[in-house]
Length: 233
Image (cartoon, rainbow, N blue to C red; front, side, top):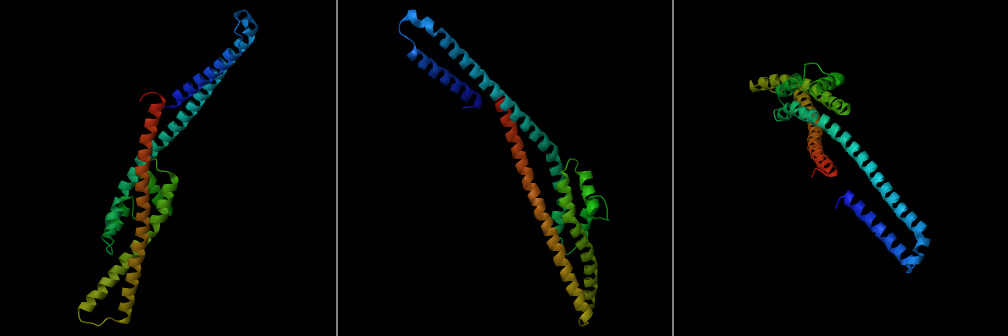
């Protein structure tokens, strides 16, 4: 039973109770009914007034709920396309994670965002430019997470080049020197740092993906609820 039927049922029940009480108090002699005319009129008038107040309160509450739901729908309809755009924009980072320690795919993913040189502000600006309507806090959080990934990728590329040269020398029959062992150690540390920072960002991306799914479900629910309240379903 919806809210409108609940209110109507309660009002009719209240009116019936008052009517039964009034009839039980009235005299059986019809000649004496005129003495109760004022009470009867006041009771009926009060009941009608009370019913009107209940209907008015229900209408005000209903309008407030519809307005709040409309604002929420507008917010989701504005942000949902931006969230989907963010997921598309950051998909290359998912692929790049499978190519480590190679950094070509990872650096190419940054280039696709709008450039080769990045800091916290430029990453957030690039995201806002390509994903219009994205909430500011999401673009800032992504900038905060992607900046370390970019720095780690640049370092890993340099360490990887040094490491490849050292391995070529080892294949030539030379025993690894102390410097070559340091190069290998620095490469492993750079690989670990890049993997960890990228993994942290991908976890955040998974959270955005789940949020997109939940926002889509909430939008569908709000639309059904609005249609129900307006009597369209």
